[in-house]
Amino acid sequence: MATARGPAYLLALGRWRRGLGIAPQSRALAALVPGVTQVDNKSDFLGKRPHRRHPGILQLSRVRLPQVLVDAAQLLLLESSMPNMERQVQALTNYLWSRHLPVEPEELQRRAVHLEKKFLENADSCRMEKLCGEVLHALRRTTYHWQELSYNEGLSLVYMAARLDGGFAAVSRAFHEIQARLPEFQPQTLMDFGSGTGSVTWAAHSTWGQSLREYMCVDSSAAMLELAEKLLKGGSGSGMPYVPGVFFRQFLPVSPKVQFDVVVSAFSLSELPSKAKRTDVVQTLWRKTGHFLILVENGTKAGHSLLMDARDLVLNGKEKSPLDPRPGFVFAPCPHELPCPQLTASKPLACSFSQAYHPTPFSWNKKPKEEKFSMVILARGSPEEANRWPRITQPVLRRPRHVHCHLCCPDGHMQHAVITARRHGRDLYRCARVSSWGDRLPVITPSELPPSPAQDPPES
Image 1 (cartoon, rainbow, N blue to C red):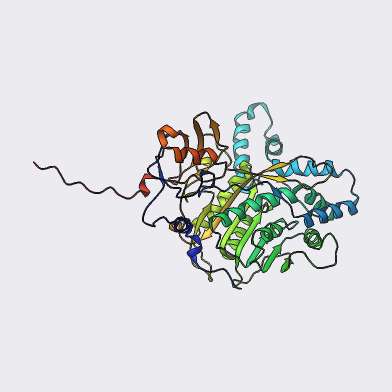
Image 2 (cartoon, one colour; image 1 turned 135 degrees about the vertical axis):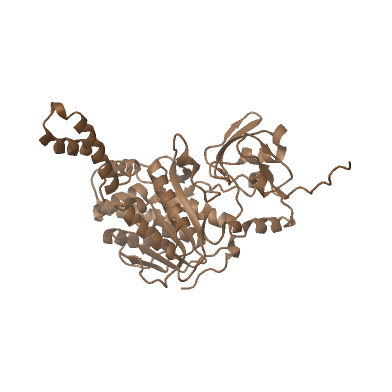
């Protein structure tokens, strides 16, 4: 299968410098001092760009679904005549957002042993034959009961009404990250694992419609695949699809010779019943990745933890694709391949982002919404091929004459940077002030600075 070529797509830093007429050897950036709340602005890093368009800006304006998709979704919902749709949509939304990962058998066994020891310590006052019943009762009461959702025709429609627009917004933001940093990357093939209603296909067509010629949608639910195909055909089972080159199947391609420029799994890994199954799927998806593997989940602790497991699995994996032996690195959002500092903190937090969007205009959707999601984009190549700027991980707090930025830094640590024009320079201050949650701050760590010229020892 033809793919977009070359690791040169990852040389974004040199590209924007050349566009500004900046010599490659000059590091026209600011230097970040890890561990303290100061940023030292060493030199001008803007060239002729305005501050609001500094090279770390990745903001995406409020997303709107294509009108043809909106019309198709409204038609399908109107024809279904399902009762209490609004209530079903709210119930499914709440369930998906509050969902935890299934408890692994090893963890369940560990809990059972712990409870058994606890009850044995107090066995004097109860009969031993009750021990097994007590342990089982305590396990049922304290263990999260995960259930696999079976997407039949009715539930697929409810999922479309609940998640079509939010899923489209989150994936559009992930695609925008690649397009903004590497505008010359023009993928030709894409595979969507757990394709559901096909929101990934629509978002990819909106981003790279001029170059993409093949979309492979994989979903185990035949009802969901049928719904996605109807959406592509304007809400009917006949007619020409709005996006050409879309193929549907219920199983992943097994051939090791099949690879795609972009592979996506959006809100699908959390639907798998075990860690072993997720491991198998992630390894398969990575083998089929030619350039970028994009994983998106809910912006919860469970979603973030799941993505970090997948990230580490790819980075630490020893198996290599027979078609592409290049290793992997994190393209976004992490500026490093080290353990996630959000998970190792004393109070772990989810690394999440927010994307504004206009909801599908159903009767219960009246106001603009925000989709909170976690993502990780893995790329084939070497980390040295991408510039590593700190990522803004929380909303930027703009105060009189100073700005608070919470940053995930290339050294693997979190930093709370308080930036002022007086201490850090007007350029960096204004860049920080116009930046938003999810942007990158164009600064480098002291280890990346060119070495100072050696000084001759003083004469005796």
